[in-house]
Amino acid sequence: MKHPEIERLMQRGVRYVSQSKRGDRPSGIAWIVKHHPEISDAQIVKILRTTKPTITAIRERTHKNIQNIVPKNPVTLGLCSEADLEKALALSVKRTVK
Image 1 (tube, rainbow, N blue to C red):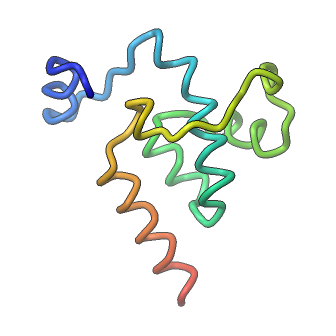
Image 2 (cartoon, helix red, strand yellow):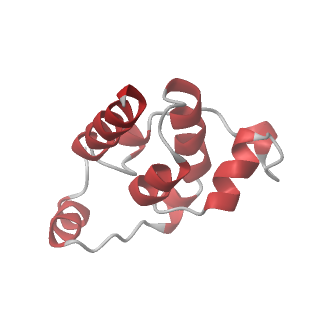
């Protein structure tokens, strides 16, 4: 369950991620790369507010902290909403069908 203050900020469009959750971002990226490889890097950047070099490093397993990264669902980590992830999945499926 999200903290009410964070949820209120996310509704307004402010995308602040607390210091403690920033360390969870690579785990969220690893989960998306593992379970939904069809999602593009640009979509992952938009959903998790990260950088393309970080995503590439996790894909290629060259990230500086790769031995400690365990894939975890970014929704349960509080890094994105279920709706954002569903939207990205729908968009990626639509692109692959064409």
